[in-house]
Image (cartoon, rainbow, N blue to C red):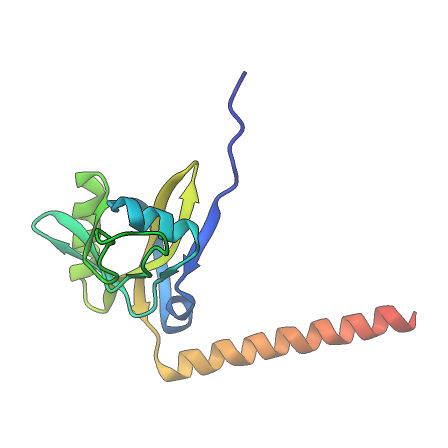
Length: 158
């Protein structure tokens, strides 16, 4: 009998990433954590704001991710904003390195989530948006909301 797969539980998301970047491609990576970091993430104390991913010496690292201190941790509690190593295949790391070297592309962590009791990071390869692109997205979102409002009001009347 096959095991039931649990749905992924999202710990934290980088909401500004999709606002500030066009996400071209996404990758999944494991993350190296200390014991108190895992427990703090289970409590939902992760934050991806202002974090980024970089390739260094054919290894991939996550910079700027804040994991709050674990409430029941002792003197050996973790450092909140340390550099964390990500786990991927060499082939994928080389591909990401090549894409990050192209003009205008950057590597951004999109979300951190549990996948069958393992913590994973979703990395996006993105290109920065210009101000007019952001305005266009806002306009499209407002138009969509107005259309939905109109449909709802019609369904109530009829």
